Length: 489
Ligand code: BG6
Image 1: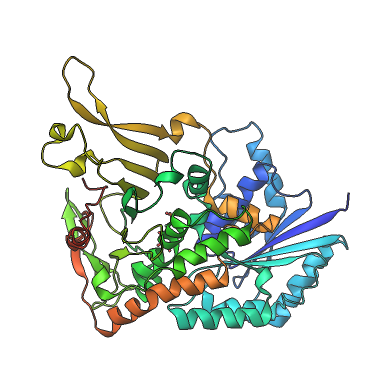
Image 2: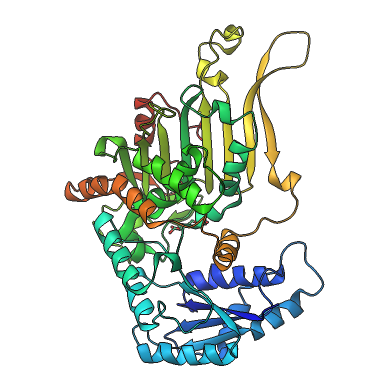
């Protein structure tokens, strides 16, 4: 067996994402024996830290899984011994050359693979890949680069970023993360559709009335106002996380499970959609609110946000796919911060039963009698199907009931974090869950005209109280398409 080494360099090692997600995910992979024998981790950032200081910094963020093995503490120690630090500027060829020397020394002439995670703002992506000369990397195995959104603010700036990155990297080397694709239930979408006979035949305009993609958080932009105000909820959540789920949900059966086959189908869905217009959306922004003796700050009360900001912290949108399968079916998206609950889910509302024999058991509201399939992505992962059932007894009374697959009951083992799966895939060179550049372009084409319109026309967001269910405008938008939000009924 050829001895090889793997180095993972986290550029921007002292940032939030690195501390909260990347190092813990790497440790979890190590803990599960998923990393190769010879691996090492390098932190790279501007702060002057020693290896020991980096280890101290990340040790506080590492946790062991619930099915705790005896040796967790030992494992942590062994893991930390493989972590090193190099301090440098992001635009310094010299500093990256020093890092290269250190890597080479540790690789000791073995076959070397290098993964760089750019956990830094996108405006310095290009500096880093240029200064680190990753295209002509001195590794003798592969060199790959993981980047994460925001990929620009619109079609133009995104295309510009792609162009610049491609000057210094091949498309093969670029792994664009959308961490929602690494979530267990999102991964499961294809399994549910394509390995069960009972769902796929129903998966079209013939049986589905509407599809809802819902994201809500019960906290505001606390501390991230500076970043957020430049992007807003549509760019932060809809254009990527929710749209990716929509593409997986709606795509045709791919030729195989290969990355290219799947991404070809996803991009077709995106290209079959009409770009959004102002009348397809409503936007909102949270305002301060006092509840139970506690005062919650409004979005513009955040000191990092301009007082007159019109940036939406909530949006609801209706999208349509113009193809034979989905013609006329509204795909409704809703995403918001500072709402009453934290949740991400996919809701599929089915059509009415034609000639329903039990009509009179439902009163006048036949909508209440339709089936609904819910995939709760988080928290408390679950898949449930709302069905009508006879209440046991001598009478004939119907009841709405759930066929319920609750993950924590069925699979007591803890579910890996999205970043674990994505890092593992990047190491394996599996691109299925990463965004291809044409997908990114198509995603931006859908939202760019709308975003431009919202900004040019200075559309004022509808204010909603912190911790509420969001602006009522969302109901009117849904009602226009004869839809009721499943999470509110
Ligand atoms: C990020 C957004 O992409 O996703 C954040 O920038 C958001 O605003 C986060 O909070 C939500 O991710 P998760 O995995 O916590 O649902």
